[in-house]
Length: 219
Image 1 (tube, rainbow, N blue to C red):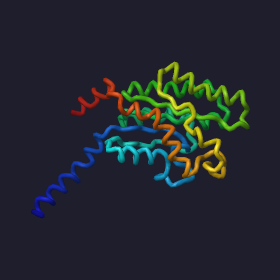
Image 2: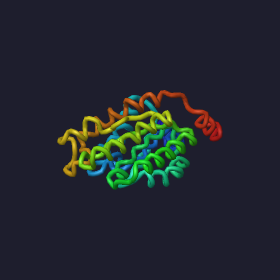
Image 3: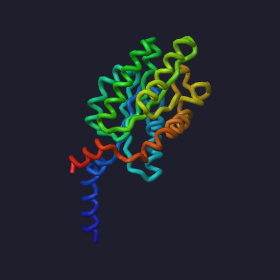
Image 4: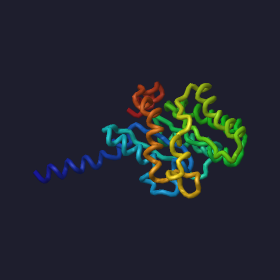
């Protein structure tokens, strides 16, 4: 009996990497707001998303490709390799904040994000765009022009959007870290709830033709 159990466990262990590799993926490409800057990474909203999916009994695997300080230009440059490597069914794009903080032209940010959306869709992924806002001290005019980038992309590309994914967080000082820019630990569940409203319907959408084709190719 023990021998049979041991053999079973060995088979499960051997198959585990393959099973994990076949799990549908959510790829998050973002900056410090998704990289859990200043807090334990396991308490960031991306890690909490993986936990929620597991608690719901789903097999989705979340891959966090977020880098602190990244811009839309940087995200665009590294996205093709990430898409090839991970082959995600869902792509979450959370970038632009550092563009705005560096006062880069909103048109440049918009063009980079548009290219990222196109790359994600060409790879067979459903795309969710997370919008951000700039601190008020950057000026009302520039701030509104910057935030409009996300709304215009959502309309032009017909892509799922969370208009401001730090809603209810950025305006609550107690939920922010001392720098006033990065959310603290207590803010992460609220951020996940903001993202989840737009993400959950994408998880129920049938796989795209490209995703199916990739699956057939692997078979």
